[in-house]
Image (cartoon, rainbow, N blue to C red; front, side, top):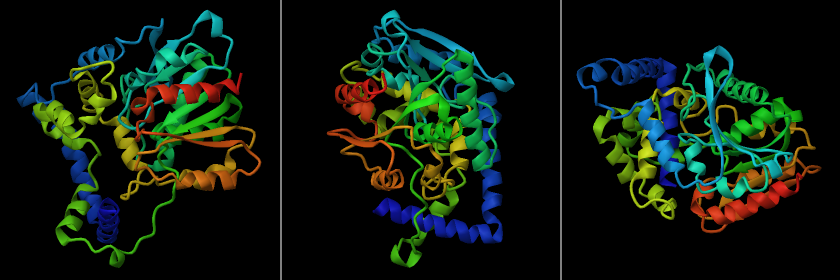
Length: 372
């Protein structure tokens, strides 16, 4: 509740600033500062300011996937404008004729976060895990600052990737931002999707309409909300430089716990760090697709009627997650003649697949078995 109050009040302040043009000034200043601090004078004066590189990200990913025993291949799949999507492929001969499962991670994620799921899922069908454009080890191009166009860039990159690897159809699973993009893709290319699985999806509910008077918040919080709203979500991780790895370990100790059956060291936090201090490409696109309250500029609920009714939909939530699951009921009401299944994984938070991997894998395999 407190978080909602802060974001709502920050939104009011930002709208006031927008009226006088101050938000554009702050946004321009921050955009310059973020890119300058990350790529200009800090690296030149202090080469190790952000102790990361593409090689270190690769090493961190290799460590994350070191416990995966199934045979797999890794490749960069070229798409338009010189960009490439980093891809893991699991395809055993005995299941190669089944509909493949394609995994799209969420904001700030990468293929390594599926480490506890890949072995189990690939036993029954081909599995493809992809680093979204602008994230992970995929290319990090400039995205449009327009929310619609940025979303379109994501969707087209997925379609170009599909065509390049030769998949005729797929079961498309998306977590968080990946869920939003999975539905957006399926609306535009419905013939390529046999089933959609949304795991704790972001971007479905509409922007909340709350009055500042109903949420009294101290002036200093309002000021901070307005000041930081132009910032990229993970800018602080880059700005703290060499303290970044420690910051991840301190603020997100839960990640270590989620993968405790695989690692006893800081493998996971190292991977999270290196994923998110590279060029803020997809991160910037996500910011431009997001309102100050954290909702989507273009809420997916407003477009669900465009999704063909013949495409089945499964939505998975964690029982301990703080993500609003109310859109599930709205989706079901909007699709009375479609298959809409809502599943809750007990004991899981937002990262359902990592919190309760065995239950998640079992539930997902059961869903996929209905396809073929």
